[in-house]
Length: 275
Image (tube, rainbow, N blue to C red; front, side, top):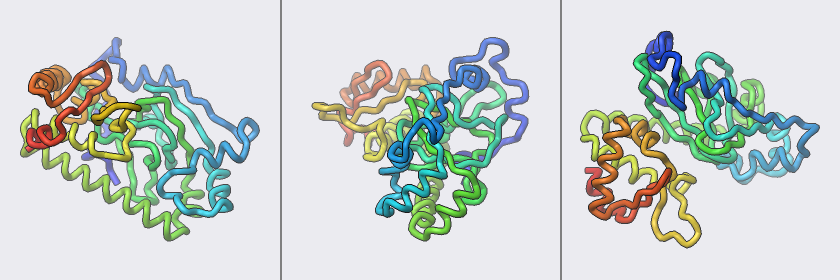
């Protein structure tokens, strides 16, 4: 299942950023990757099981089955900003996201980045034709410090698709992502930029599964942990325009802005702005 509309394979043949790539540029991220691979000798069975415990598709599995899946899915950690998947390094693997958030994005030939999805902990993503899930020309970037377990095609077939419960849950996840993609495509055609930004904020603020929208201790309002640039990429507009719209929303009391965090003060009024 594609995260966003497919484009030509030559989109990154001549990147516009040249010798001075922006902070998110794929080349710079790949050069500074700080991935830690936890081998069996370094972590015990409890740590391996921890990586897949509380992941939604594995709920209610007996311990014996959890142990078998954990043994087949090595745990890896990435620092915020690292690239987990790049078109230049294709590999058919399934990532089980235990902790943190991952941004799925692509870069146009003129250097613009489009965020196709933000994947939250407790779910899956990756390149797996067996599941009908494809990354195409997309990159996967860690937005936070991330912990994942990685499964091969053979183990996905043997351990996941052979279990009707897990297979049905994977189908449900992919179906929701397709519906989200169709909604975003419709919004990009029929909604104005302020409406798209309000829609994106409303969606993030009401997703109870997303760490970006969870309340801090003592907080009364949903808080979205994204920068203006990240929000702009989700809404399909520029950072400058996003900042302008956010300031207008804040001036009307809908939001409170802080560095890397947006607090939604008036969810109902923000929903009205979304159209």
